[in-house]
Amino acid sequence: MQERINAMENEKVSVPVSEKYMLTIREASVYFNIGIKKMRRLAEDNAGRFAVFSGNRYLIIRTKFEKFVEECSAI
Image (tube, rainbow, N blue to C red; front, top):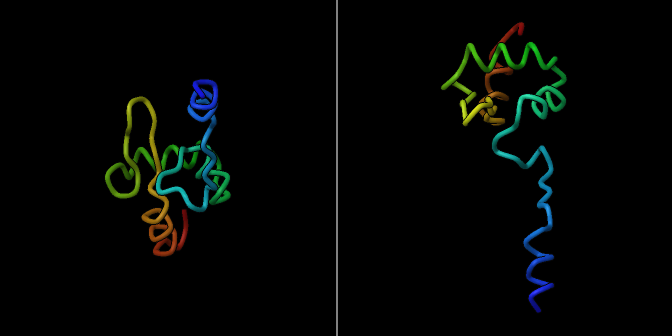
């Protein structure tokens, strides 16, 4: 029984990127087909709008970034 509990705790939860609320810079760059350097610069310049700084990394709020992209004529 204890082995089963340990196995369940060690399983890695996999959530598709399209269902995540927040994305890492790397996930967002792949998902939106934007370079990592450009995505990081966008996150740094727009912290609070669609990006948050958590610990030592930026996270992109996917739904807010989608709206940002729709409103922009160029990135």
